[in-house]
Length: 30
Image (tube, rainbow, N blue to C red; front, side, top):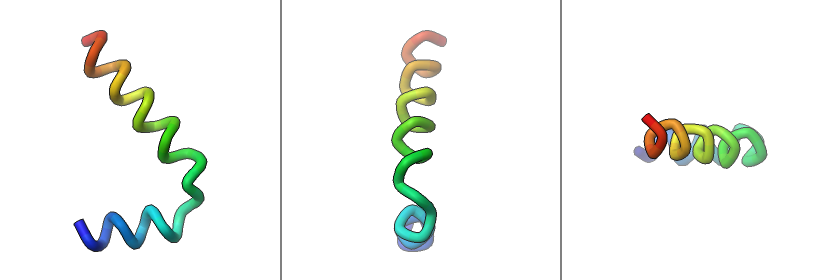
């Protein structure tokens, strides 16, 4: 989990929320 947090901090926080929304939609839809 610590590694993911670091990656999230390193990578732009812009594409992450989008991916999360898409995953949530897919999970809710599927």
